[in-house]
Image (tube, rainbow, N blue to C red; front, top):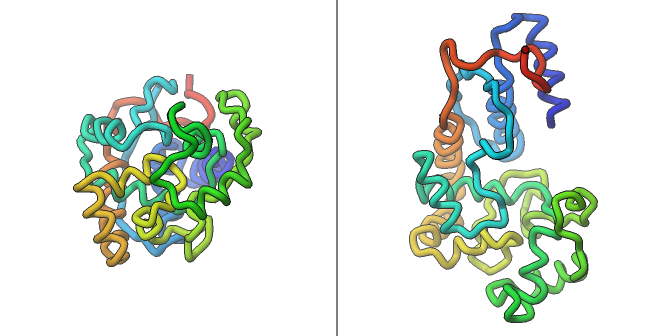
Length: 234
């Protein structure tokens, strides 16, 4: 992904040096990917500046391993709510995830029972066939871990942004945080609505992406416009 961003940055710098930030390029790339993968289209404000601090500790987004309640708390701290979180989790119909992120659901669930009882039996069997119980889950080894599709029922396959909510409501979500949508009152109602009205999902996904893209942005004379997205200007 960073290579793609840097290729775009190189072309943009040739056309208009020092104007378009890496932050804007990333936000616009996400918008265009949503349009290509799932017919989700929206206008996106630009004018972001790049930060002069780059640290994982500064990233205020929940990991895929946290609970829905923990993720919602994080979202609320940045001005987003249950509708935004439920909607944006719908993007988990795309792509793949490492077995290390879900092995706890498949074996010795929470060190108390053999597996997560909320998971569909058929999905459990498939995931166990692909994810052995001895997967290494340390961050250093996660990149070498086996991967599985985020949504085995996706009509458009792992590269499409479509409706994942029927799978969630059927207990066939791969990630724990996605499956918890089915057990959270407000989130379940939202998920059920999106499952029956995918057009509403696309509309709300666009709105929530614009909101997320406007969190804590730098503008005006704040930060800088990087000349290379891999490093600060100085």
